[in-house]
Length: 286
Length: 235
Ligand SMILES: Nc1ncnc2c1ncn2[C@@H]1O[C@H](COP(=O)(O)OP(=O)(O)O)[C@@H](O)[C@H]1O
Ligand SMILES: [Mg+2]
Image (spheres, each protein chain N blue to C red):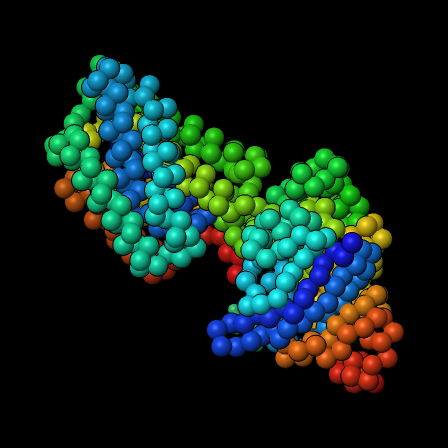
């Protein structure tokens, strides 16, 4: 039990990290980015590529994954998502799914359909505390995720860019009226959303194999974490991610790992039925 | 030079023409009021000026620069600030953050902190609420914040859409006094109201009904017009 709880929290940290990225795109632009899991996947491949081509540890390759996925996100924003800002419509969902499929197919063409794993020396070792064992890779992943999340929170609270992002999230029209250029804010926010997915990918690949389809496993977690944390609440998404990790681990210990996602979906349904604004729901402008 | 020149402005929503070819201008140092009942087209005029909607025809100029085709943030950078109907403060930001995001550095001779302090000087209530999340503030405080936020743009023209809405008569009077002070500090004001008590401080104004100009003129003409007296003052 305690074992499952602790590994759940560790795994959940990374979930929280990419969920936070998903939540930024939704909170600021009302974009439900169904390709967010694929952005994590690209981050995983970027770090895996650095590892297989140059022997670089995935955690050292974080800056690479960050830059690659942030740049890709900015391009995707300009090509596709820009048209759907403020409107989470069916067309927007379809466009995002199309982006997801294109990214999956591209990854398959480049890296092949099979899964690739990074085998680092330290990553496969465990820290033993009495009966509890925790993987060093997951501990490192959790620490990095928490550091990133705290950084993002601080940037959102303290910098003028962060405050502008929160203003646009609250009321895009009023934000324009006070002189904020919403195009600049949206593209940087979307790049930031992708950057978090990229970092999460590099962190994740240090203990989890990457395949072109891994995005479809991760995407539902981002969605559930965001709803758990309260739609549009960026810090809440991180907590939501941790809850997802714990639920998953608990299920695989107490029940079976084959069905570890089933209770997760149950939670999503319950939430949508009873607390549509999430556990940490917040006010909207209208 | 004319701060704002509106010529034959027409605004339509599909088949519905909300504003029919109205013209007026605002000169430096003025408090110009745009009066009219609900649905008269007042908000549409302001939204057209600040670039939130595209007029069907007409011209909009500020000191010889055309506003047509500009984005709202570009209009704000020209020094035309718009306090929208219903205040529209950023609810999850603190009072101070609401002010900070509205600071336009290029327009201000003062630093952010200096300008903020000037706004707190005009609205001392805001100073004591600076760390408070905006949605927990009272209606009157939120209206002050909305005006304070617009002042962070260092505007030459301040446009307000029914700032008295939801305020008590006393609060309204206080707010109008503060607008007069803001004018004295150098900004001109374009005030949209249903509340005719604002005529007292107006230099000139225009009365709108169903998108048409019913009357336009200086303070005395507005005050003495039968139409305004009957429709608004209940005399
Ligand atoms: N977004 C809109 N779509 C369609 N009609 C609108 C819209 N906004 C305003 N109108 C109509 O335009 C007219 C003028 O509205 P408005 O400018 O809001 O008037 P006021 O601010 O004087 O109350 C009204 O008849 C209103 O119903
Ligand atoms: Mg109105």
